[in-house]
Image 1 (cartoon, rainbow, N blue to C red):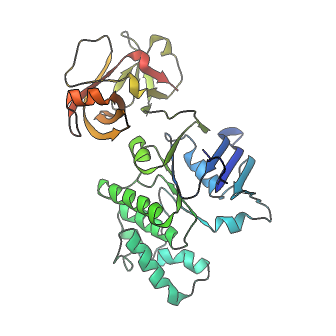
Image 2 (image 1 turned 90 degrees about the vertical axis):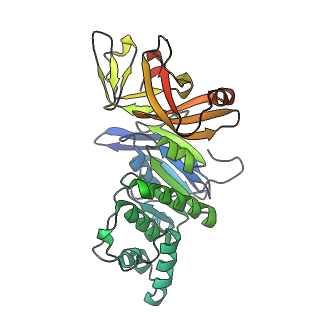
Image 3 (image 1 turned 135 degrees about the horizontal axis):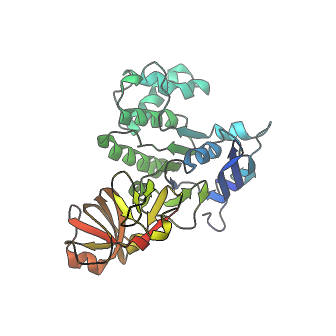
Length: 342
């Protein structure tokens, strides 16, 4: 992921982390370049938060080495604290002090010895950047989920971080604030050149926001992005086994009936799109609507809400021939053999 000839702003080499003797993170190499947005994509339990905590120097890895701007990070009596002061992180459920929005945002400024007379202007500027102008005197614990995340980002911005880590920034956010949060993240990166690393389990969001997306599964970076990853359980029936996501049932190959896996993926290229159901041996067919169209230059990716959210790859010719667009009602169809247990 590092560009040839460029020193990575942050790099992990042979990093592992263990909890109770179990390896939960195993990263051979990961390089972060200055001024870009990176999306860490994966289901719950894949190790995203652990990875972010290590990258933010909140805890050392069990083994391996981190480098910042080309130099190794020393945890004992070394450079860790100074480097960490150039980073900021927001949590999925940010901690709120029992005071005003202004008081919460001022915390980092006080810790860095910024004089009181200079704080108000800095705080007001940060609030404007995240769209919370006029919120300074509001009680922080009375904010909505979206407003709380925006305030947490403002609290991070006042220390002017080189790298901003965002852990599932829209996971507990009302729908109305998700777009606002995504716009704020993009503007921070574009206008300030801040490097941003965010975690998400939302595939379309990762691709909307990030310059680079890397998927994490069971603590490891996988070679290529896995799309249509669903969690659930396998159930055996006389008609064959299926994978129950809690929202839909996905028929799977007979030989997978005894697998202990709780995750499944479907290749976007294996999914057939049609406006009407058609005769086929494929057992998996779901009706839904297109929620997003992504031009891939020669091909088109569709995001389809059909019980679960599917990402589908089709050609431009097929897209035009079918007359598709956002809101189009369609069927997505695929064979049981296209469902791969992870």
